Length: 170
Image 1 (cartoon, rainbow, N blue to C red):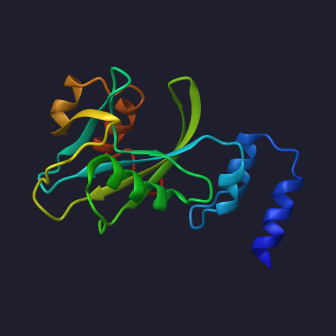
Image 2: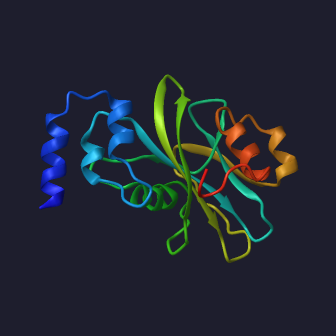
Image 3: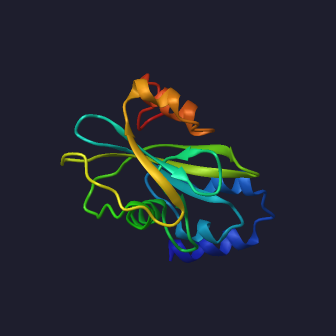
């Protein structure tokens, strides 16, 4: 009953996408009905191997290196999207244990997107990656090597992560 009320209320809102997002999102529960709203949302993962190196992937369609992840499909929650995107882009298979870090509104390309960030620490040695057609290369990089790659909007995210400024409650 509560879910039906939520959907009915959401449909009657004369809504601003940003305000609607923050009104309906809670850290503990992502309302699937929100995915129906006209909001551009993505999910990204900071994937670390046992040597604490970060996986970055080179985008085929831009000059940027990227974090694995991608668009959240309609009716999909961010964690479901993350698992799907990681497997599609890298062939890393679940089970891995994503830890939610934070959510941020970011300018990515020409769009403002709401991005859900997760951390995944792999329990195995550095796995080989099989890239999807969206990417042309990948690297496992240490904190000191990040400056060698054009990470665009994700540069500040990774700097904050390595500086300890980003944790699950930021």
